[in-house]
Length: 357
Ligand SMILES: NC(=O)c1ccc[n+]([C@@H]2O[C@H](COP(=O)([O-])OP(=O)(O)OC[C@H]3O[C@@H](n4cnc5c(N)ncnc54)[C@H](O)[C@@H]3O)[C@@H](O)[C@H]2O)c1
Ligand SMILES: [Zn+2]
Image (tube, rainbow, N blue to C red):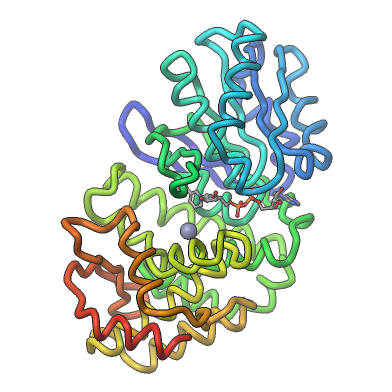
């Protein structure tokens, strides 16, 4: 097992990463032994893993809340239903909320924890690759609103993140590949050696080899933890984690969030951002080719859907990164390096999109 730390002074917390950690939860989180615990999960994940987690906390008072499986359940309705359960069960401020699931469960459970009685302890037990390498670390919690994704939420750090790499074996291939898009992202923005290692390990990654996955997850979490520690509230460097996301969010939103998965849209968005960087002479053609080749090898789409420029613009302008009406993009400047560009020529952006569609 590996333990990393997200350094945030008195709010610092550990990330435990290893095989079979679900069966070590009591040992790793001894502070939960006698508490009131709410486990938020869904039936897909709960049917597979809940019993093992519950066995760990036999002396605690455990309440389980199932939300529906899907992005549409990351809603204010689900949030209200969880709150009603907590209030109905008389849980006090000393209770803890545990998220057992992917990013949907983690985001909503985190927002519940952030706001129940003005904040109770929160624990992440992420079960998708995306949640293990991205959403469970860093304290962004949210629910969606009909007017947009993640519009209601809070920064609220967990007390610990427990990552059992073995649960990834039951993940559907498409969900698994989506997580790899975020893993590749860390290599591009921050770590050339890690990118090179990913290139070497394509087959082992796709075969979900346990040791390979653990290394990929730990490296990704290390990078995210360092960036979050440097800029918790996304004033500057944390924005780099959004490589490919401005384009990706537009793809997801324009397709009603049901045709493109987040990781797929991010992969296609990363190719657009890289093309734009080449056009602006910030990135070499050979680095561009390596980025496209790795994403492709990991079964991710490298072409965006054809959409009119007006559609792109409309959705990109809703991006939370838009400041003073200006589109801002994270662009790779080499493998392992990236920067936030605040003023991109719209024609170049449109051309990069056209080339990558
Ligand atoms: N908070 C953040 O920083 C952050 C970052 C990135 C994404 N997100 C959010 O994360 C969400 C997407 O997360 P996701 O990709 O994990 O999707 P998800 O939570 O919908 O999970 C994907 C699917 O996998 C299933 N599943 C989960 N674990 C499984 C397992 N071990 N075995 C079998 N099936 C399993 C789920 O039931 C679901 O059907 C989005 O709402 C996005 O906004 C948040
Ligand atoms: Zn993402």
